[in-house]
Length: 353
Ligand SMILES: *Cc1c(COP(=O)(O)O)cnc(C)c1O
Image (cartoon, helix red, strand yellow):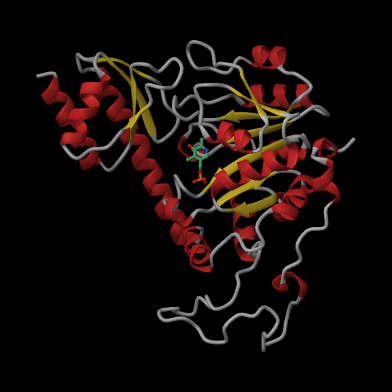
């Protein structure tokens, strides 16, 4: 049995759209896609009068090298949000199938499921926000086609261990696709589970250039999975998902020089994360700072509403995560530059002075 046998039959059967860019390669005079023959103002050799490559080979190769997988195991799209949406649409039949998530977690899994009219099975994280593999497995129903695991988890910051991911992948074999969302893995102490996709055909990994790679505005995310899953999703992704200027920015970020810069900034964030965790934990109104492997801290406060408002009055916007289960007293604070972090501490010190 192949993991794509679990996908919606009509998606497996459909004839994908064949774009002009896919049908023809080579040739210097392009009169096949009703494009303009003139570059737009300010184009700067981007060739934006031409449709982009559906899956730009240079970007796919750079991402495959970065993540340690083969190019055929990579799908690149408009942020990992698009990959989440494509997975749900490809695997969940409306009104019949389901996804499983572990709240409190990233909101887009449930949003994509609701758009597709797929049910959302919620299996809460343990009290310390660690993943309870036994609880997940015990709660699963045959309707569940996708199990999302966010590691490090947003908004709590904890990681799922490699051993837990393997146990889940083994237990889900032939039943469901396990999707490990590693949006923040660059900030963690332990490596990605991406190398496991060769061993478990029902494991997929979400990666993004939005966080550690400073490209949230360019919308570049990737799904790493076995070739059949990637091929299936390539059938339903929009014909030209990635704008040429965004691809150019991504290639610069992934160049040798870009990688040096990204690693430098990740190191600063990790250092600042430890500093902020200590400084915040020492303040009288701070109940707890959750241990974080990501580029943010979830902070429990005596009076989160006041702190939120005072920060806002000082021009500092943090995320109010009080609506999440188990986080009724928490704010999520992204780690910024040293100067930005100083400003946060100054406001909090002022409140508790
Ligand atoms: C930010 C975030 C994403 C979305 O990333 P994009 O690539 O920008 O779409 C995915 N998963 C989690 C857990 C996130 O926090």
